[in-house]
Length: 82
Image (cartoon, rainbow, N blue to C red; front, side, top):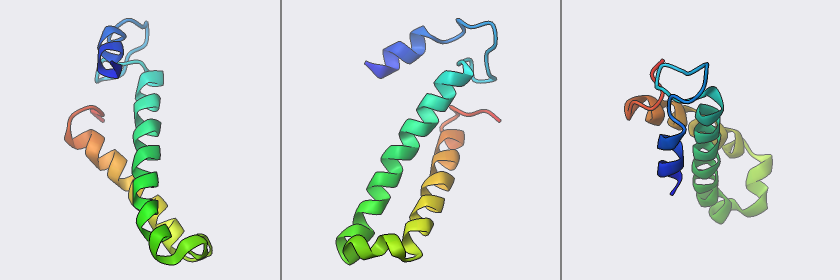
C-alpha cells in the first residue's frame, strides 16, 4: 500500500529531488527505515545486556550502524541518487 502511495506522489511537486520524489517523501522513507533498522539492531544487545546496554557504548554503536546502513541501503537500491 505504501508503495502505491509513494509512486502516485512521484513528480507531483514543483520541487523534486533527483530520484523524482519530493524532499518530504525522501525524509519519510529515510526516517522510517532508520527507525526500523535501529529497533532491530538494538533488540539483540538489549536481549544480551538488558537495560544496562543503554549506559554502555553499544547503544551509540547501534545508532551509528543504523544511520550508516540506511544511507548505504537507500543509495545501493537507487532510491537516493546523490
